[in-house]
Length: 132
Image 1 (spheres, rainbow, N blue to C red):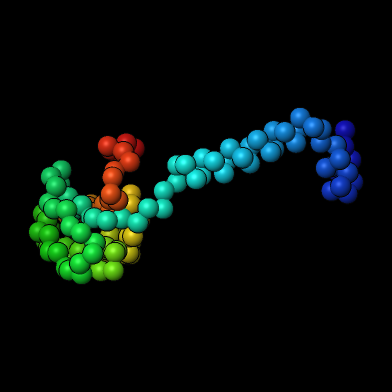
Image 2: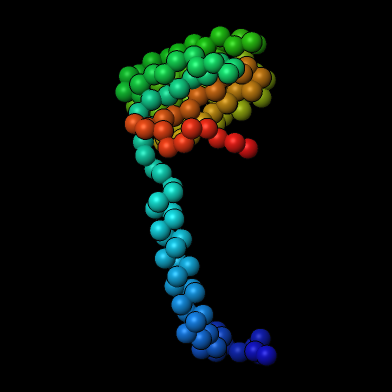
């Protein structure tokens, strides 16, 4: 049993070659998976949904405000400089507005009480749907 009062160098010297192999292989695998699966692609368009229907798809290259009329009122989605956000919403808690600017493909903001969602998409969608 290792003495807990030993120096950190003593613990490192207790590692065997197989231990080092596992540590190095794990680090390489984490770096590979991070680069492969984590996308930082900038979005090209925003898809706005009202309930389960697609309300519209808009380019992020033009500055504009889009008013979407939901069940409890009108929400405003602001698009500027390649980003999108809810700027106004009739809901009480304003979680969708506090979500802030979205700029990367795959990011989404949802106003549940008003049944409005927006999702940023890149040149190609990497998946068909999300399941929770």
